[in-house]
Image 1 (tube, rainbow, N blue to C red):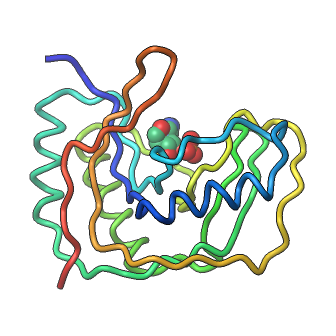
Image 2 (image 1 turned 135 degrees about the horizontal axis):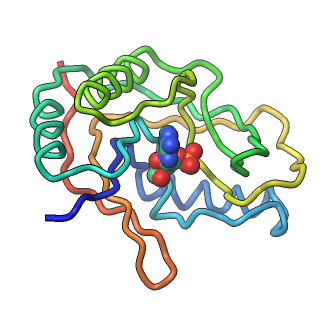
Length: 175
Ligand code: 2AM
């Protein structure tokens, strides 16, 4: 079987996807960048790259053994990375549970040969891509909170000019 482009991530509740899409449309002009479609909004925990089926299976088994409580995620920060052309939403203070989960998944990925960037993990939800020109960011004061009680493994698939993220498996967070 062929390799798949995979990543572990947290998906957003449907109503939050819709809220963010509306807020984004009110906040950023159309020329700021290309909006990520609502269904693709997510927060990546660990990017795996192109992965062979056996490695994917091993990482899924390890993910299924993670025992960790859920946590609240506060989305109250935004930023612009001009080099990759990303406008993002994130948190001023990342919850410990999020950092722990990401660090465990990234360590397991690295041990299975999935290259992990040496840059520190900066949890974010990409809102706009191809945002290479200066962008005016909204003043602080916006805030959404949601409970994270599952995480998933996604395959990134490209077909007919579109990228789609398909959840292959999900696991609960609980004590
Ligand atoms: P991005 O949104 O900041 O581009 C699917 O592509 C997900 O994996 C996206 O969240 C993307 O982050 C992330 N991703 C893609 N390539 C990556 C890389 N080389 N290192 C870390 N994350 C990556």
